[in-house]
Image 1: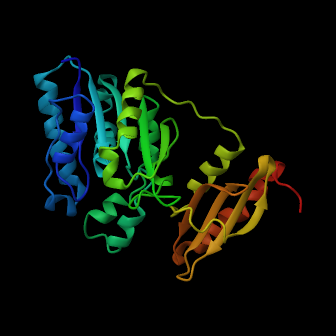
Image 2 (image 1 turned 120 degrees about the vertical axis):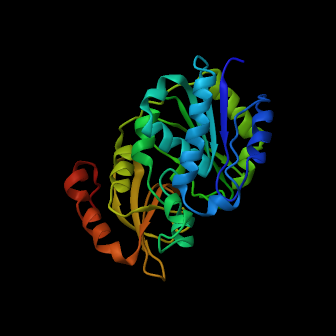
Length: 293
C-alpha cells in the first residue's frame, strides 16, 4: 500500500457511491466513512468530528503512509475544515480533489435553510479563504460539472472555483455523476500522476473577479441571466461588467468577455446598497483600465 485514500461522500448520500468511485480509481481499500444519509441533513459539525476521528485512527495505524483525499460535494467541505484545523497534516497529503464542492457557498443551501436551522446554512458558508490557504500548500484539483451553462444542477460552477487550485469545468455531468463519470476519473488520474500547485495570474480579469468576490454578502450565482443584464462598465481586454435585478429584488453582477460569462454573483435585497457602493468604487480602483464611453 503506497498511500491511504480518503473518499468522503456528501450531503443526502452515504458511503457506497464513494466506494464505487474509489474502485474506479483503482483503489480497493479506500477509507470511506459512512456519515449516514439522515445525519447529513442536520449540522456539519458532528460530521466533521466523525471524519476527524477516522482520520486520527488511520494516522495512528499508518503513521508513515501519505494521504490522498477525494471529497464529493459536502465531503470536500468537511476535508477543507479538517485541513484548516490540522495544518500539521498538510505535509502528509499528496493531493486534494474536490468534486462539485461549493467552496464559495451553496446557493441551494441558502434556499433550503434561510433560518439557519440545519445543514443548508452550513453548506452556504464561503470557505474560499481557507481553501485558498490550503491550496497554496497542498496540490488541489476542483472539478465542476455543467449541465445548463452554469451549474451541475445542484452546485454552481463559480462556487467550485478558487485561487491556487486547478479548476476544471466538465460539460454535461450532473452533480451525483461526478463520482463516476469516466472523464472525472481520467482527470483525477492525470492529476495524481503529476500533482501541482497552480500559480495565479494577477491579470485584470483575476483582479476584477477577486474584487467582486470580496463584496460583503455576495453569493456565487448562475450564469443564465448574463445576456439580459445591462453593461455598466467596459474595460480593456474586452472585459465588461454587467448588472441585473431579478423580479424578487436580488441584484446580480456579472463579469464577462464578449458573450462569455466569467463570474456571476448576487446579493439579496437587504444587501443591495453594499453592492451598489462596491460597484461605485470600481472607477477609483480600476480607472486606468476603463474604456470611455
